[in-house]
Image (cartoon, rainbow, N blue to C red):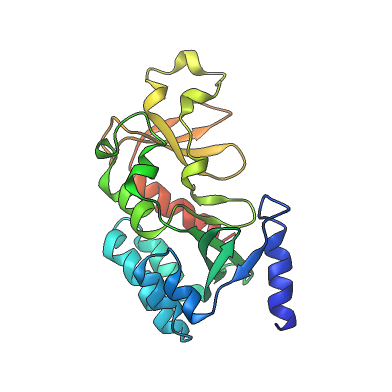
Length: 236
């Protein structure tokens, strides 16, 4: 293993959130073929050609979110420098290596193995049928979250980090005219700002920019603001 790969693994290991779990890159053909990952991941990682790999992975993004995440997909298409199959403990992820347009710095983003619909649905008080289909498609077809790897923020949260806003105390809670039990965070910037969706509302107007410091700003299009804030993170 060359020095650059060793340095990258040492960096990634700092952020596994467990001293026991170590990062490994999966390149062995038989391991890939037998791994519990989507078929299009297997197609992608059985080729060493980066353009073919990007085409396979981003093709799936476009299949489901060509409009909703158009800016994110274009950014990835343009500035991705590597896509690797990563395993941490027993969990498989894709590691996206992205060259920031603004700063020319490298950023690592993680997209975890998709969930089954039943496992994703366990996060919510309502049935999975009541959650917008495109959100369900992201978590069950593409990734269980997509975010900046070191902080686990600035992207769609993994399911384990999605919470009901009713689970927390807000200083301004008595001023809110809404049922917090149906409001869930799907994005955090790591500094007290969240993108929250009220699952009882239309996805085109039911999102909030939620802050620990001030009243939420509502009536927002969920995918528009997600797409915008992911780009903010990629441009760090």
